[in-house]
Amino acid sequence: MGLKRNVSLRDALRYQGKGPMLTFILHRISGLGIVLFVSLHVLASFMMNQPWGAQAGVFINSIYEHWLFQIFIFFFVLFHVINGLRITLLDLWPKLIEYQREAIWLEWSIFLPVYGMAFYVLIRGGLGG
Amino acid sequence: MNLRTAPQRGFNFDYVMWLFTRLSALAMYLLALIGLVGALLMGARQKMSLADLMRWAFMPEVTHVLNTNVPNIDAWKTIFWQGMGITFLFFASAHGLHGLLNVEEDYLANAKVRQVLRILVTLIWIATNAIGIYVILTS
Image 1 (cartoon, chains in turn purple, red):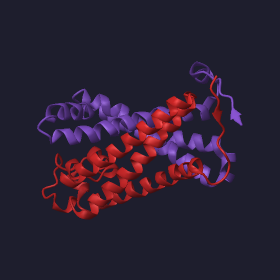
Image 2 (cartoon, each protein chain N blue to C red):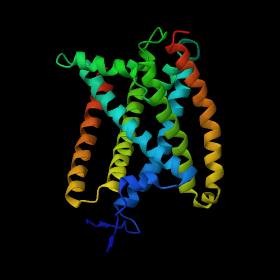
Image 3 (cartoon, rainbow over the protein chains, first blue to last red):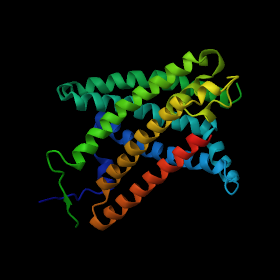
């Protein structure tokens, strides 16, 4: 018994799923971003204390401390955390799935002010304010 | 065209990992909350910036405290916080790398490619845990 999957990546991206689809795709992108960031950060922190890799380790970690990078990683982490809480609660209590759209609105109403404030602080610090 | 087998209902690996992804998310909210409260109890309110506090909450590791105004880091590198860090690392790496497989398998149907990637991701998972635990215990 097989499930036929001939949807190309291009078609998947053109799918008009509106709000829920946007959170789905952002959850994937932010998740992949965090996996890349955390794996490289663990590796760089290890290399920092080794004589053969100190330079490369310090270089990678100095990218992470840059304010431009932090604007991205904070978006990824905060979105993944808030959206992940919605997914977890709605999946573990399936009766709540009826209110999925309301939950997504609630999610954005928490994410936007918190991220907005952090964005303002990061931009102000980064531009030397 | 390669065919992908549909996930089966019932108690199997797919179901266990589906549940693990949700439960590890809940566990990580709890761990981050404990890290946040612990840091505040140890004086973070006056000696740490918000960014440093977030960094500590997501990974209670002593090198995350070195650039703050905390004068004495002894309380921040106890066995308790190292254990918390290792627990967080375990949940985060399993949750994240299984998520990576989940995404990748939605777009790649070839059985050989998927098998190779599964082995590769498992090896990356083991290596990340080993390196991470070494870093937490030696820093």
